[in-house]
Length: 309
Ligand code: SF4
Image 1 (cartoon, rainbow, N blue to C red):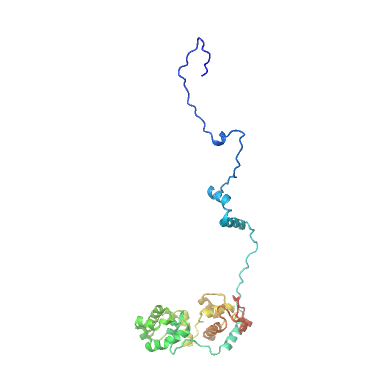
Image 2: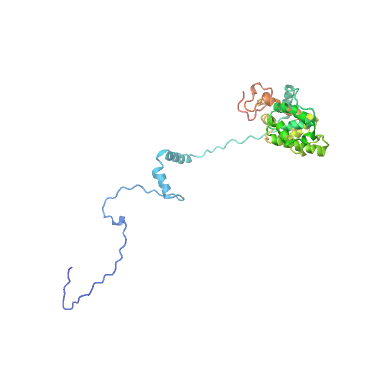
């Protein structure tokens, strides 16, 4: 230690007192000597608002590698594509069918199917009611194979109403949905016995009030068993052909029926359903309609048809 000059007035200062010096903590960067070379650094990836830095790093550093990175880059590029200014073509407004064209279609159908009749075999209104209930989700041919033995075993409404559920289900098993159909038959016949003196009613309101009987079944019974035109039967064929022929643009069965009723003379309401069903089965198939050989082609706008056989 280097001493300062010790003169006469000098006194030993006593023990040295060191005030504790607080050392400012220095960061590694500030401690770096001036002039030292800077290491090349990777550009700092900044995170976008709402994203963590780690995800931003992934995007900046690693996302380009591999299939995912490529997809991410291509997605970003795709997003930047300018949006097309053109609008998709507006749906064509449905135009009410021309009465002259509708008359030509009906005349052609009448000529094509002069012997059109109900495809279900029956002798009484009750038998037709039962056969129509059985024809749901089943072919008419299958129903016609089941009904002769069924009508022999259960000759009237009372016998159906009091039938053993298991025996009835077994008898109609091959028509499908046999539990629901057996219940509908028993309940409808119980109503017929209790409220209508075992006779099938002759009005739409009374028929549709029977349990298990809807508007379509009621129209079938009234039109074919009683010759009463109260409505038009609309099934899958009638729906398809009505749309393709431009008679309606509805898809709901009841709406189609109400759209067809003003177009078709009332006396042909039952027949028009048979005509359209027969034409749908023979020519205007669901998948490949035979437009090239169809007699209705000159009057048909072929709406919704993209391919034909
Ligand atoms: S022209 Fe074609 S779409 Fe029209 S009714 Fe005939 S088969 Fe059907």
